[in-house]
Image (cartoon, rainbow, N blue to C red; front, side):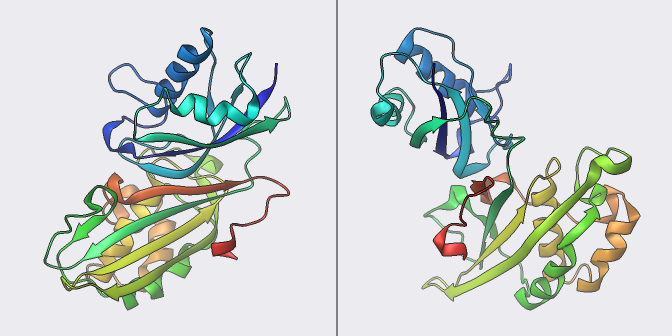
Length: 260
């Protein structure tokens, strides 16, 4: 029996998140159903991270036992033929039996997309947060570097836990400001990297940065908010639709060419 490492892409709008749950469809459930239809066997799929309801992925990593009788080079296409259109296996390759997509992770990147302007977007609206009030990107650029480093992120997690459980290391937190489109909208793309994140942590960071851009908080408030260790001290949580898991790296992996 061969273990596989697969890269999964999905639009999370119709799902309650990655993990199987009782009251909503999930990405994990759809993958396991596809493998069952392919093999007639119950095959467990493990992911690198539990993306929340409505969150997307371009580079989720999953591990599962390859179904017997399907050549590995045809496995991605075979699974895709049994998946809904909003989920796709990008690739599937053999992996070491000891490979654990969550515990072995070295670095993840999440992106978050905002569309700034009075005219709501019709295209891509399910993958961006439309912010129609005035936001100063320069203020957000000033604040973003405060998140880089090792901190207690209790103030940016919706499930507060005491002690070291809420300590995380952020390797990168920045944003790219795009050009204005014909409707007068400006696109902002955040990039946040770390090995692991707390529940709703990235959305809380982005929402707080938007509050800073709107003038509700000063850029230099971030260290004090971190010190407070209370979710009430930080800003709003950004909605899930703008969040995407871009990639997951493991020891020995090279960064994607676009991020070097």
